[in-house]
Image 1 (cartoon, rainbow, N blue to C red):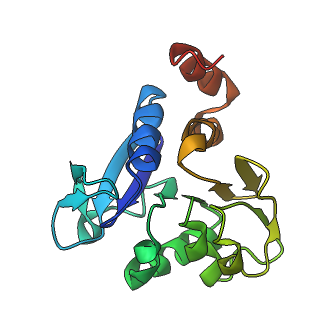
Image 2 (image 1 turned 90 degrees about the horizontal axis):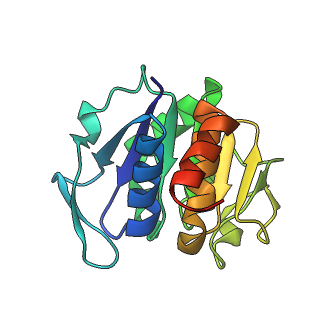
Length: 180
């Protein structure tokens, strides 16, 4: 079973985080939510409190296949330990994904240089060295997946599922959700 970690910080975009968790779990992926705060209860950008499965220090990175960064707030870029883990993951050839404001983390780490990427409007300036494809819902370039924003979360999460479990599993879950 593939394993994913999705990171929550105060102000995270609830749709991006929770819909992605839901879609991946429907597809058979073991997903754990990880708090980047000092509490397992993390409040989203619209006041929805979510109880994270793990605190950052409890997360098992060695056995994880993919790291997922939802947007909603630039605060996700303030967590230095997360940035070190993302950079290490990327350098090992593992998949890192970010949606909305969160691709700024990847840009700041320099891992978008020469890569195609998308993000929420207004965050393009943080995607240092990237070839911007902001007209696309989701962009895949090697082991990096970026998504544009909350209204496009289904496209984003289904792409992440396809990357982990293949197109047949993506289509199966999309059909269950009446997306095809």
